[in-house]
Image 1 (cartoon, one colour):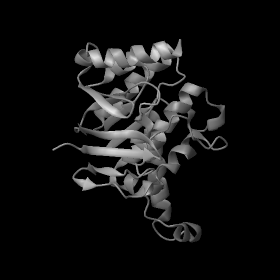
Image 2 (cartoon, rainbow, N blue to C red; image 1 turned 90 degrees about the horizontal axis):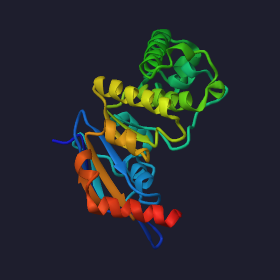
Image 3 (cartoon, rainbow, N blue to C red; image 1 turned 180 degrees about the vertical axis):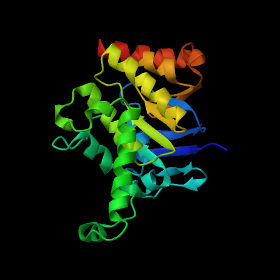
Length: 256
């Protein structure tokens, strides 16, 4: 059984169909990529999968449980985390504090108990800090725990957002263009981070424009164009698929 099953998902905005009857499976342990030209519906699909948008049609099941209709925080608690195209960090807070924010869905102590320092609160806070620090080390930010997020360079900010998502203890992570704005060495480092995350038993679903990264790390690729799935398969087949080549050539001609 697949970990994530997407079936005939359709999302419209007025007269625009942003996602058009898209179906695919993501199996446990995969690194699966979703690619396509700008405006293909990739981020809208991510929004549907994580509860930020509700589709007009279709189903999304995670580990056999329907998630359509869940609020985003409940999707996180179910075991699905995500990052965004634009980093959304608390710049005045340290890297460790940013990662700690990701621990909130997994804490049992409420605000009232924390403010009164009731029994168990200190232990949970200590464990939360240990887990947050672990996520920083996993993404290569173990040396930056006390650095304000606003002082980190762009590439390390990307890694910090991944660390914060990891702190929610997901089984599935959705990464929305994690390589955007990275140079070649930073992209290579990101690829190693993705492999380390998978080695921790976390499945990855990645939207990405960097085809070098996609072809290197992906086990399987879904290709969207104008909201529709036009291809799906391993990288070696996707690279040769005529519909994929035409979609990307069309984008290049439009940008010329």
